[in-house]
Length: 314
Image (cartoon, rainbow, N blue to C red; front, side, top):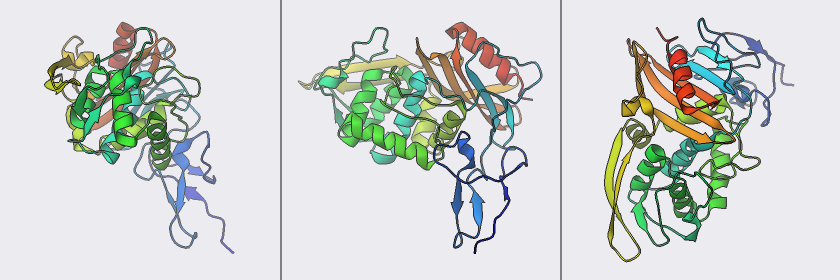
Protein backbone atom coordinates (compact mmCIF):
# COMPACT_ATOMS: atom_id res chain seq x y z
CA UNK A 1 0.00 0.00 0.00
CA UNK A 2 1.27 3.42 -0.89
CA UNK A 3 1.34 5.69 2.11
CA UNK A 4 -0.30 9.09 1.90
CA UNK A 5 2.20 11.89 1.64
CA UNK A 6 2.07 15.58 2.44
CA UNK A 7 3.32 17.44 -0.62
CA UNK A 8 5.56 20.43 -0.17
CA UNK A 9 5.21 22.54 -3.30
CA UNK A 10 8.36 24.53 -3.84
CA UNK A 11 8.20 27.86 -5.57
CA UNK A 12 6.85 31.17 -4.39
CA UNK A 13 6.58 30.53 -0.67
CA UNK A 14 6.62 27.31 1.34
CA UNK A 15 3.02 26.27 1.88
CA UNK A 16 1.90 22.68 2.24
CA UNK A 17 -0.94 21.32 0.12
CA UNK A 18 -2.64 17.92 0.16
CA UNK A 19 -3.89 17.84 -3.41
CA UNK A 20 -4.09 15.25 -6.16
CA UNK A 21 -3.36 16.40 -9.69
CA UNK A 22 -6.42 17.05 -11.84
CA UNK A 23 -6.18 18.41 -15.36
CA UNK A 24 -8.85 21.03 -14.78
CA UNK A 25 -7.87 22.01 -11.27
CA UNK A 26 -8.62 25.65 -10.45
CA UNK A 27 -4.95 26.13 -9.57
CA UNK A 28 -2.96 24.64 -12.43
CA UNK A 29 0.43 25.06 -10.76
CA UNK A 30 -0.13 22.02 -8.56
CA UNK A 31 0.25 19.45 -11.31
CA UNK A 32 2.30 16.58 -9.87
CA UNK A 33 4.16 13.69 -11.50
CA UNK A 34 5.01 10.32 -10.02
CA UNK A 35 8.68 9.40 -10.18
CA UNK A 36 9.61 6.24 -8.27
CA UNK A 37 6.99 3.52 -8.49
CA UNK A 38 4.39 6.15 -7.56
CA UNK A 39 5.93 6.39 -4.09
CA UNK A 40 7.75 9.70 -4.55
CA UNK A 41 5.93 12.71 -5.88
CA UNK A 42 7.91 15.60 -7.37
CA UNK A 43 6.20 18.98 -7.43
CA UNK A 44 5.58 20.16 -10.99
CA UNK A 45 6.14 23.72 -9.78
CA UNK A 46 9.49 23.08 -8.08
CA UNK A 47 11.21 25.64 -10.31
CA UNK A 48 8.21 27.89 -10.94
CA UNK A 49 6.40 30.70 -9.21
CA UNK A 50 3.09 29.57 -7.76
CA UNK A 51 -0.19 31.38 -7.18
CA UNK A 52 -3.10 30.16 -5.12
CA UNK A 53 -6.69 31.33 -4.99
CA UNK A 54 -5.89 34.49 -3.04
CA UNK A 55 -4.55 37.76 -4.42
CA UNK A 56 -1.07 38.95 -3.49
CA UNK A 57 -0.77 42.66 -2.77
CA UNK A 58 2.22 44.97 -3.17
CA UNK A 59 2.80 48.37 -1.66
CA UNK A 60 1.68 51.19 -3.93
CA UNK A 61 -0.06 48.94 -6.48
CA UNK A 62 -3.85 48.73 -6.75
CA UNK A 63 -4.66 48.16 -10.46
CA UNK A 64 -8.31 48.39 -9.51
CA UNK A 65 -9.64 48.53 -13.07
CA UNK A 66 -7.71 45.66 -14.68
CA UNK A 67 -9.20 42.21 -15.17
CA UNK A 68 -6.09 40.40 -13.94
CA UNK A 69 -2.43 41.11 -13.28
CA UNK A 70 0.67 39.44 -11.88
CA UNK A 71 4.38 40.03 -11.31
CA UNK A 72 6.81 37.13 -10.88
CA UNK A 73 10.44 37.16 -9.72
CA UNK A 74 12.17 34.48 -11.81
CA UNK A 75 15.22 34.33 -9.53
CA UNK A 76 13.64 33.95 -6.11
CA UNK A 77 10.44 32.39 -7.53
CA UNK A 78 8.35 34.86 -5.56
CA UNK A 79 4.94 35.95 -6.71
CA UNK A 80 5.37 39.66 -6.04
CA UNK A 81 1.84 40.67 -7.05
CA UNK A 82 -1.26 38.79 -8.16
CA UNK A 83 -4.79 39.89 -8.90
CA UNK A 84 -7.31 37.39 -10.30
CA UNK A 85 -4.33 35.42 -11.61
CA UNK A 86 -6.43 32.28 -12.17
CA UNK A 87 -9.41 34.01 -13.79
CA UNK A 88 -10.11 32.85 -17.34
CA UNK A 89 -10.16 35.88 -19.64
CA UNK A 90 -9.86 36.67 -23.31
CA UNK A 91 -6.09 36.98 -24.02
CA UNK A 92 -6.31 38.74 -27.41
CA UNK A 93 -2.97 38.53 -29.21
CA UNK A 94 -1.11 37.24 -26.17
CA UNK A 95 -2.39 34.00 -27.70
CA UNK A 96 0.38 34.38 -30.26
CA UNK A 97 3.00 33.47 -27.65
CA UNK A 98 1.56 29.96 -27.68
CA UNK A 99 1.37 30.08 -31.48
CA UNK A 100 5.06 30.97 -31.66
CA UNK A 101 6.00 28.30 -29.11
CA UNK A 102 4.26 25.54 -31.06
CA UNK A 103 5.60 26.79 -34.41
CA UNK A 104 9.20 26.89 -33.19
CA UNK A 105 8.91 23.46 -31.60
CA UNK A 106 7.26 21.72 -34.54
CA UNK A 107 8.50 23.76 -37.51
CA UNK A 108 11.82 24.90 -38.96
CA UNK A 109 12.86 28.56 -39.37
CA UNK A 110 13.70 28.10 -43.06
CA UNK A 111 10.43 26.26 -43.79
CA UNK A 112 8.56 27.98 -46.64
CA UNK A 113 4.93 28.81 -45.93
CA UNK A 114 2.29 29.49 -48.59
CA UNK A 115 -0.82 31.51 -47.83
CA UNK A 116 -4.22 29.97 -48.49
CA UNK A 117 -7.60 31.66 -48.91
CA UNK A 118 -7.97 31.50 -45.14
CA UNK A 119 -5.60 34.44 -44.64
CA UNK A 120 -8.42 36.74 -45.79
CA UNK A 121 -9.58 37.90 -42.36
CA UNK A 122 -12.44 40.40 -42.42
CA UNK A 123 -12.98 41.10 -38.70
CA UNK A 124 -13.11 44.85 -38.19
CA UNK A 125 -9.98 46.24 -36.58
CA UNK A 126 -7.97 43.03 -36.92
CA UNK A 127 -4.25 43.72 -37.43
CA UNK A 128 -3.17 42.29 -40.79
CA UNK A 129 0.08 41.98 -42.69
CA UNK A 130 -1.87 42.08 -45.95
CA UNK A 131 -1.18 38.56 -47.13
CA UNK A 132 -2.88 37.31 -50.29
CA UNK A 133 -3.42 33.68 -51.28
CA UNK A 134 -0.25 32.33 -52.85
CA UNK A 135 2.11 34.69 -50.99
CA UNK A 136 5.14 32.93 -49.53
CA UNK A 137 7.46 33.64 -46.63
CA UNK A 138 9.65 31.54 -44.36
CA UNK A 139 8.58 30.56 -40.88
CA UNK A 140 11.36 32.79 -39.54
CA UNK A 141 9.89 35.81 -41.34
CA UNK A 142 6.38 34.89 -40.28
CA UNK A 143 7.36 34.64 -36.61
CA UNK A 144 8.85 38.13 -36.73
CA UNK A 145 5.62 39.52 -38.19
CA UNK A 146 3.53 37.50 -35.72
CA UNK A 147 5.31 38.70 -32.58
CA UNK A 148 6.24 42.26 -33.53
CA UNK A 149 3.33 43.41 -35.68
CA UNK A 150 0.84 40.91 -34.23
CA UNK A 151 -0.61 40.14 -37.67
CA UNK A 152 -3.62 37.84 -37.49
CA UNK A 153 -3.38 36.64 -41.08
CA UNK A 154 0.21 35.51 -40.46
CA UNK A 155 -0.99 33.43 -37.51
CA UNK A 156 -3.21 31.49 -39.92
CA UNK A 157 -0.32 31.15 -42.37
CA UNK A 158 1.86 29.68 -39.62
CA UNK A 159 -0.82 27.32 -38.33
CA UNK A 160 -1.59 25.85 -41.75
CA UNK A 161 2.05 25.67 -42.76
CA UNK A 162 3.24 23.93 -39.61
CA UNK A 163 0.34 21.58 -38.87
CA UNK A 164 -1.56 21.35 -42.17
CA UNK A 165 -4.67 23.06 -40.87
CA UNK A 166 -5.73 25.57 -38.24
CA UNK A 167 -7.68 22.85 -36.44
CA UNK A 168 -4.65 20.56 -36.12
CA UNK A 169 -2.44 23.43 -35.01
CA UNK A 170 -4.93 24.49 -32.33
CA UNK A 171 -4.94 20.90 -31.05
CA UNK A 172 -1.17 21.14 -30.70
CA UNK A 173 -1.54 24.43 -28.84
CA UNK A 174 -3.87 22.84 -26.30
CA UNK A 175 -1.68 19.73 -25.96
CA UNK A 176 1.46 21.77 -25.37
CA UNK A 177 -0.30 24.04 -22.88
CA UNK A 178 -1.43 21.04 -20.83
CA UNK A 179 2.07 19.53 -21.00
CA UNK A 180 3.64 22.59 -19.35
CA UNK A 181 0.92 22.82 -16.71
CA UNK A 182 -1.11 25.65 -18.24
CA UNK A 183 -4.34 23.79 -17.62
CA UNK A 184 -6.72 26.72 -17.13
CA UNK A 185 -6.52 27.94 -20.71
CA UNK A 186 -8.15 26.80 -23.93
CA UNK A 187 -7.42 27.81 -27.51
CA UNK A 188 -9.81 27.81 -30.46
CA UNK A 189 -7.62 29.78 -32.90
CA UNK A 190 -3.94 30.74 -33.33
CA UNK A 191 -4.35 34.53 -33.33
CA UNK A 192 -6.51 35.46 -30.35
CA UNK A 193 -9.44 36.95 -32.24
CA UNK A 194 -12.51 36.70 -30.05
CA UNK A 195 -14.22 33.30 -30.01
CA UNK A 196 -16.32 31.57 -27.38
CA UNK A 197 -14.23 29.08 -25.44
CA UNK A 198 -10.92 30.82 -26.15
CA UNK A 199 -9.37 31.98 -22.89
CA UNK A 200 -6.22 32.13 -20.76
CA UNK A 201 -5.33 33.11 -17.21
CA UNK A 202 -2.58 35.48 -16.15
CA UNK A 203 -0.81 32.58 -14.45
CA UNK A 204 -1.03 30.31 -17.48
CA UNK A 205 0.33 33.15 -19.58
CA UNK A 206 3.33 33.26 -17.25
CA UNK A 207 3.84 29.52 -17.74
CA UNK A 208 3.56 29.72 -21.54
CA UNK A 209 5.74 32.82 -21.79
CA UNK A 210 8.45 31.29 -19.60
CA UNK A 211 8.44 28.14 -21.74
CA UNK A 212 8.73 30.19 -24.94
CA UNK A 213 11.69 32.06 -23.45
CA UNK A 214 13.65 28.80 -23.54
CA UNK A 215 13.94 29.21 -27.33
CA UNK A 216 16.62 31.55 -28.69
CA UNK A 217 14.56 32.62 -31.71
CA UNK A 218 11.66 33.71 -29.54
CA UNK A 219 14.00 35.66 -27.25
CA UNK A 220 15.63 37.35 -30.20
CA UNK A 221 12.38 38.46 -31.81
CA UNK A 222 10.63 39.86 -28.73
CA UNK A 223 13.61 42.14 -28.04
CA UNK A 224 13.53 43.77 -31.49
CA UNK A 225 12.11 47.24 -32.05
CA UNK A 226 11.76 46.84 -35.83
CA UNK A 227 12.19 44.32 -38.63
CA UNK A 228 12.78 44.64 -42.38
CA UNK A 229 12.65 41.86 -44.94
CA UNK A 230 11.08 40.81 -48.26
CA UNK A 231 8.82 37.93 -49.23
CA UNK A 232 7.24 36.90 -52.54
CA UNK A 233 3.75 36.92 -53.99
CA UNK A 234 2.23 34.09 -56.00
CA UNK A 235 3.97 35.34 -59.15
CA UNK A 236 7.40 35.53 -57.54
CA UNK A 237 7.43 39.30 -57.17
CA UNK A 238 9.08 40.73 -54.07
CA UNK A 239 6.95 42.36 -51.39
CA UNK A 240 8.58 44.38 -48.65
CA UNK A 241 8.20 44.06 -44.91
CA UNK A 242 9.04 47.07 -42.79
CA UNK A 243 7.44 46.75 -39.39
CA UNK A 244 7.86 48.09 -35.89
CA UNK A 245 7.09 46.45 -32.59
CA UNK A 246 3.73 47.18 -31.00
CA UNK A 247 5.50 47.38 -27.60
CA UNK A 248 5.57 51.05 -26.61
CA UNK A 249 8.49 50.59 -24.22
CA UNK A 250 10.68 49.20 -27.00
CA UNK A 251 9.42 51.76 -29.52
CA UNK A 252 10.57 54.49 -27.15
CA UNK A 253 7.11 56.03 -26.93
CA UNK A 254 6.65 55.16 -23.26
CA UNK A 255 9.35 55.61 -20.63
CA UNK A 256 10.47 52.57 -18.68
CA UNK A 257 10.29 52.71 -14.87
CA UNK A 258 13.42 53.80 -13.01
CA UNK A 259 15.91 50.96 -12.42
CA UNK A 260 13.96 48.57 -14.67
CA UNK A 261 14.84 47.49 -18.20
CA UNK A 262 12.05 46.07 -20.35
CA UNK A 263 13.63 43.29 -22.41
CA UNK A 264 10.65 42.37 -24.56
CA UNK A 265 7.15 40.97 -24.56
CA UNK A 266 3.83 40.81 -26.38
CA UNK A 267 0.85 43.11 -26.69
CA UNK A 268 -2.78 42.32 -27.36
CA UNK A 269 -6.02 44.22 -27.86
CA UNK A 270 -9.58 43.32 -28.79
CA UNK A 271 -12.93 44.74 -27.68
CA UNK A 272 -13.63 41.65 -25.57
CA UNK A 273 -10.12 41.36 -24.11
CA UNK A 274 -9.40 45.03 -23.59
CA UNK A 275 -5.73 46.03 -23.60
CA UNK A 276 -3.26 43.31 -22.59
CA UNK A 277 0.51 43.10 -22.14
CA UNK A 278 3.10 40.59 -20.95
CA UNK A 279 6.74 41.52 -20.43
CA UNK A 280 10.15 40.17 -19.55
CA UNK A 281 12.04 42.82 -17.57
CA UNK A 282 15.22 43.02 -15.50
CA UNK A 283 16.02 44.97 -12.36
CA UNK A 284 19.20 47.01 -12.03
CA UNK A 285 20.96 43.99 -10.49
CA UNK A 286 19.94 41.74 -13.41
CA UNK A 287 17.10 39.86 -11.73
CA UNK A 288 14.53 38.77 -14.34
CA UNK A 289 10.80 39.32 -13.89
CA UNK A 290 7.68 38.43 -15.85
CA UNK A 291 4.74 40.82 -15.59
CA UNK A 292 1.31 40.50 -17.14
CA UNK A 293 -1.86 42.60 -17.28
CA UNK A 294 -5.13 41.46 -18.84
CA UNK A 295 -8.25 43.45 -19.68
CA UNK A 296 -7.18 47.01 -19.06
CA UNK A 297 -9.44 49.87 -20.15
CA UNK A 298 -7.20 51.42 -22.83
CA UNK A 299 -3.72 51.34 -24.29
CA UNK A 300 -2.67 54.46 -22.40
CA UNK A 301 -3.99 53.13 -19.12
CA UNK A 302 -2.33 49.77 -19.77
CA UNK A 303 1.14 51.29 -19.91
CA UNK A 304 0.48 53.51 -16.91
CA UNK A 305 -0.65 50.46 -14.92
CA UNK A 306 2.24 48.32 -16.15
CA UNK A 307 4.69 51.03 -15.13
CA UNK A 308 3.14 51.09 -11.65
CA UNK A 309 3.44 47.31 -11.45
CA UNK A 310 7.07 47.29 -12.61
CA UNK A 311 7.90 50.07 -10.17
CA UNK A 312 7.60 47.51 -7.37
CA UNK A 313 10.86 46.01 -8.61
CA UNK A 314 13.81 47.15 -6.50
